[in-house]
Image (tube, rainbow, N blue to C red; front, side):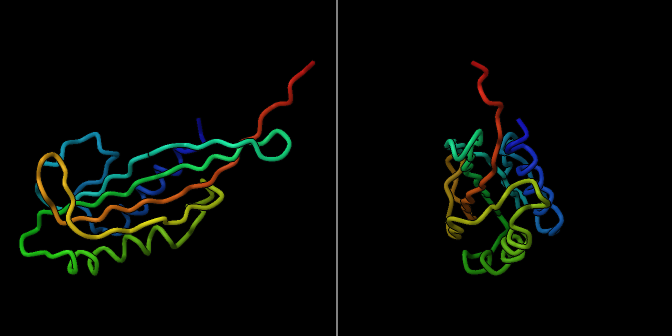
Length: 138
């Protein structure tokens, strides 16, 4: 389905272009606890019928950032990661892969991941896309 895959790929590309991360994935690789990692993880796709033969997809995408850089505080990370937020806000259509994607939250602080505590950011974005479908025949 081309409703969300292009958006996820574009989020990853935009984060990669910032040069801030040692690794970017969709959470499939284990974080070994070195460097700064971003994960772009798809959440729920809530689907609603809108208008004639159209579905609206409201997709949640989580952007999780973890670091084990020594001496970095949540305040330091907020400052260092503001370019990542800005990159995701530069084009809310993400190259035309969605109608719009806007943040719901950008929560810097301490994250629990794999039984460890890291300095990190938990971001949540709402992506809206539309899909048309053929009318039923008789």
